[in-house]
Image 1 (tube, rainbow, N blue to C red):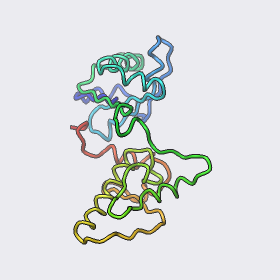
Image 2 (tube, rainbow, N blue to C red; image 1 turned 90 degrees about the horizontal axis):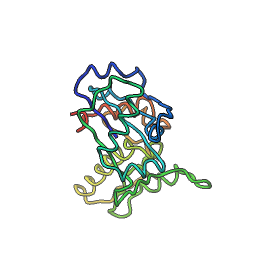
Image 3 (cartoon, rainbow, N blue to C red; image 1 turned 90 degrees about the vertical axis):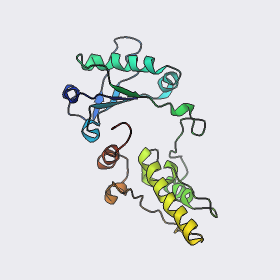
Length: 207
């Protein structure tokens, strides 16, 4: 769930931390929204992203946008009593997406994830695969899904313009996004500069 404020002064209410944690036993809803990402510096507007998981996430997907907003604001007001209502709210319900159902790739005991991810990148004839599961170190992230989509688009262009099958090496390749430093993307984990670079891109939330 993403909250965006047009008033720049709202950003002064947030601590200068990228992640904000809250633990409270105020009522039955207080423990549900306790982790917030603060990408205000990257977005150019006061922005907070709330995270919820497990059974709480499943429950949230059956709530209305108004109910979700009310629960989040209840917790935020415990931390920031003067925080106003957000100007825009964006709520995702990935568990309700019929082609996703809230799933993403993960490591499995007894298998080499990097080998599997590399194999999933290999085209089958003219069928090209993309998605976070094919992103190697950037699995389970929007960054990985976006980057592999760009890679797949380049390969499709080669198929359409040259009418030949692209030969791919079996060794893992570095995922590259124009807005990113390639050295960041080749490092394990979706943290620090990489994810912040992604958050700085122009998107509907920033507008």
